[in-house]
Amino acid sequence: MARRNIVRLFELRKGNLDSRVNRDYVNNGIATIPCRISDYSDVISTYSVKGFEIPNTEFIDYLKETAEVTPSECPLVLDIVGDCLSQEDKKTIEETLLDNLAYQLGMVEKDEKRHTHTFVLMMIGLIVSGLLLWFTRDLAEEARELFFILFWFMGDTLCDYIFLTGYDLRRERRLAGRLASIKVIFSESYEAPNYTESDVDQLYTEIEKKVNKTIREEENDVLYVHVRK
Image (tube, rainbow, N blue to C red; front, side):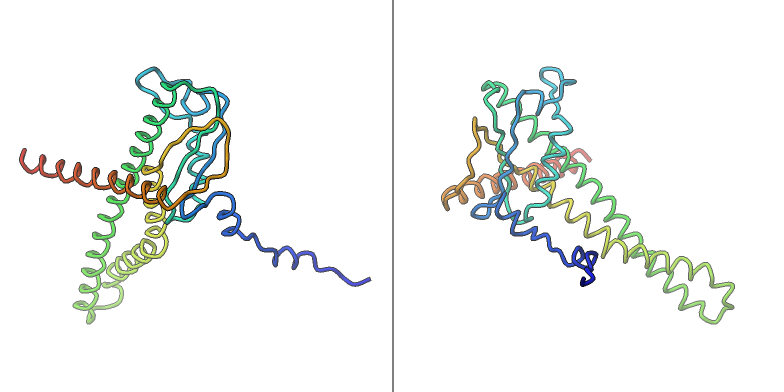
């Protein structure tokens, strides 16, 4: 009997992620995330009080994990499927989700700014330590050892930021921006969407308005701070 190399077969197995994602979620460049619920508390945490609602963490985790596998260039539509919600519930859910996702985008932006400041400091430190190494090149190696350590530490940190941490931050920033721009719809039963060009144009227009609004708000905040100073 021929010897079977089953391990090699497992190594050769392909997942076909892109084709499955396009089949299951993407239509005409828009990624739809369906989520079936049986109760209001599936989306809004039972610990919330009226007027200060927060999303259910499991729901947010499902939303993020699903959105993350969809193409980064695709706008997101969240289709909440169920017949257990009143009109007031739907309004509360939409406002709570959008507020929470916008808040999380702000946290990502804050983290991104912190890493950018660190990057600038590391760049300055690399240049300074490199100059010190150059100007002290006639000194003994023992006297320059601290400058060597600083130089390689700064260089290693910069490489990590550019090729590893920086990539992860940019990916997280794009995902947070997509989630903060998500369109929330409600349906009693799920049907695979078939977006027309008009639907696509309308969604892009809505996202563009949200983006421009946040840009204006940020500019006004900066202007207000300068006026106060």
